[in-house]
Each structure stands twice: as structure tokens, then as C-alpha cells.
Length: 231
Image (tube, rainbow, N blue to C red):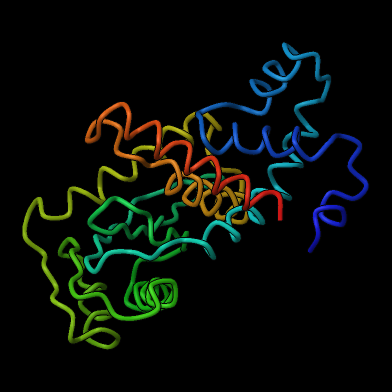
């Protein structure tokens, strides 16, 4: 899809659309917040238009970012948390590697063996192979998926071993609160997929590197973003 076709019938330049979508998925901002930020730059666009941009272009940008991703580590930390949508309890499954990269995030209605296997299949497809090791809590559903799909991988369930994945849910929780809960499974999955791709790109370990290296990594991330949104 060329850029001209991708942004056809939109009266605002692609650069403005791209910037608004980046702001929404990169920071804890509402569509109304972004409307105000753009207005400060004399760009008059409604928050509803920004919402439509994010819904349409966020998943497309995320798909391109995933295609260009350099690959994940060999150890996956997997966990699930409760998410309420319109009063009904759902389960948000997440897998991250040893570097904190989000391998996949998937919303399901259950957390039984079938749900675990469904999630593992998604993770294996994105990883393009079996990880050397997985780390989970003691939920028995993980044993089913491990035994039937990746029995050769090491499976660790020691207490506190999965803290990395449990902590990785926090950015999502922050956004969920800011959005006043997800409105539907479709809306949640669409947002979470795009948010994870942008998070991976700009997850630069600022506290682990020098200021000079951080600026270099950040510039490289911006270049990758420009390629993803401008193809």
C-alpha cells in the first residue's frame, strides 16, 4: 500500500496523522489531550477524528513495526491478569522476553488449557520457533500448553521468577485507567497490539545506558518509526 493510497480521503497531511497516533500510543494521553496539543500548534482537529485515526492507522503501523522487529530472546516470561470489560471478567495474556520486549499480548474470555494453547501458538508464530525456556506461575493451564506444544523447553514456576512479566502489565494498567476501562474486546485488542509494538520500539532502557547512548538509540527508534509510517 503506497502512502498516497493509505492516506486517501484524509484532509490532514500524513505527518499530522502520524504524529497524533504516535502521541496516543507512546504516552498516557487521551484523544482530547492530543486535540489540545495539536491546537497549541494551530492545528484544529477534533478528538473524534484523532480517535478514528488511531483506530485505523495504529494497527497498520504496529504490523509494519513487527515485520521489521529484529527478533526476541530465548526466554519467555508469561502471565495473565484480570480485565473487566462492560462488567464481564476477561483475561489478558502477555509474554515478554528477558529484555522486556513484548512478544505478544492477547485478550481471551478464559484461562483454561485451551486458552493457554491458543496463546502459546500465537507466541510461537511470532517467535518463529520454540523458546529455550518459559517462566510462568503455577497455573495448571500452562502445564497443558507446555506439555502439548513445547515440551522440550525448560519450564520454570518458582516463586517470584515471573516478576518481570507481572511488572510489564503496569503500563497497560495505567492506560486502562486513563481510558476509563476498555469498552470491548475488539477495541482492547486493537489498542494493546499497537501499544505493544510502539512500546517495544521506544523501550530503550534509559536507566541502563549513558545519556549519549540513549540519544543515539532514541534517534534510531525515531528513524524506524518514520519508515513504518511512511512506506
